Image (cartoon, rainbow, N blue to C red; front, top):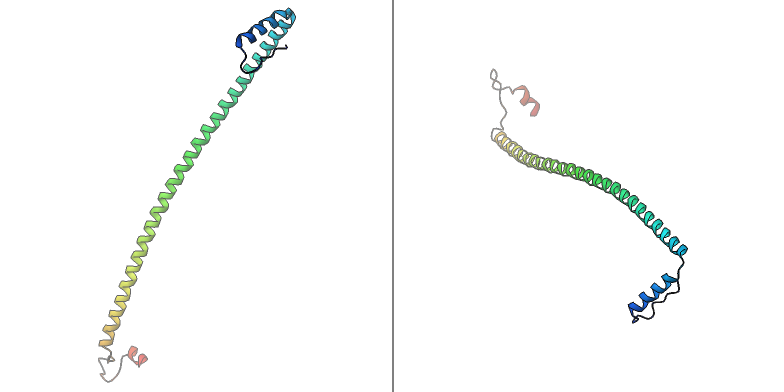
Length: 140
């Protein structure tokens, strides 16, 4: 076909007329061949569309499966983070308890030392007041 649309400002009706003339000049065999090619291309297009549709549906199924799996992993991760946070809270509470117990122990030790320093004279035995007890003999 030697059809030229002309410049951009050409008339559509001129092109349509030229197309009609060209079609009228074609012989019946060319028209049948073109029609067969068109039917063949249409069938190929339908086949490709079916293949792509099947592949798309398969991919969509895989995507949905991966999204569900990702959601499960995310949920488990959130639960693990909550467990870690609870454990960290327990550790913090235990550290505070440890600090308080250490302070209480230090206070008790200081109080005990001050009580011992008030009564620092050696104890004597009951049977012989001039003799020191066994533990006092070792310290003096």
